[in-house]
Image 1 (tube, one colour):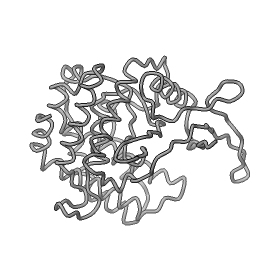
Image 2 (cartoon, one colour):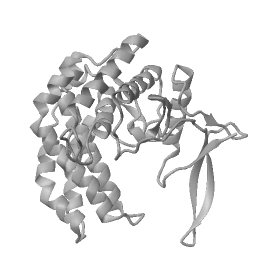
Image 3 (cartoon, helix red, strand yellow):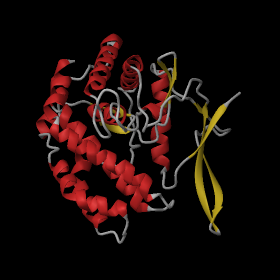
Image 4 (tube, helix red, strand yellow):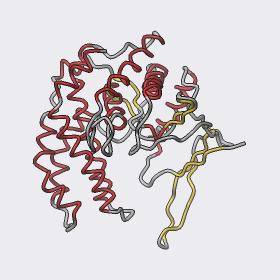
Length: 321
């Protein structure tokens, strides 16, 4: 037998793992048959806490054991060049997860993070605090040079409450990129890495995945360059998502309000990734490489500018599906 043993990152809270694991169990029971199931310990728990020594001090770390998923690891989050068939199936798999999990009750177990439209409101202060960090390198200089544009991008994320109320909440994967699935013959045959999962607008999950996967990280034959969103792939993705939900007949496909605010949520999710890059780098608990994270930040800043220049095209694609 083969299993996957996961050591969780420092700082994870038990209620976050309980949310993740109960969501996986619920989704598998309701139609997501390609997710990795959890192996329980002798006392029935889905995770264990074990001590390890670090710098002379004992710390406790969490571990879980999953079924091992067959299939091919074809892509990473910085190499998202799926075929059109794979894109459609990749999007359909997210739709299958959303449909399978739609009646999930978190029972008070939530990730320690605000929902996206609330999170966006607190980002300006977080980003201004990062700017005061006492670091002198190319990463920090690039960030300072682009801070005003980043804050302007955050300010453009405006969705009235009455419209946000028309955008369904659902369990969301919140890290759905091509590196978190396995493929075989153009089809997704495995999905994993639910540790960022939470309850949020399902449009956020769709847009987050598109920002991750329908982009260029280099000059491509179709004329795309680093940071560009590939509109033809977005259309394939959205059609695959909508078609799968129509086929399943449970959760409704994206509605007209969600389509209307598609460009806005794309911008919000890009800001979410900018925050991931900044908060991860500036935490510096693992000695992160400044040049590696500068590449990530540069990519997202280029995308930020592309989104602002192509809002109309994004809106047209969303309206067409």
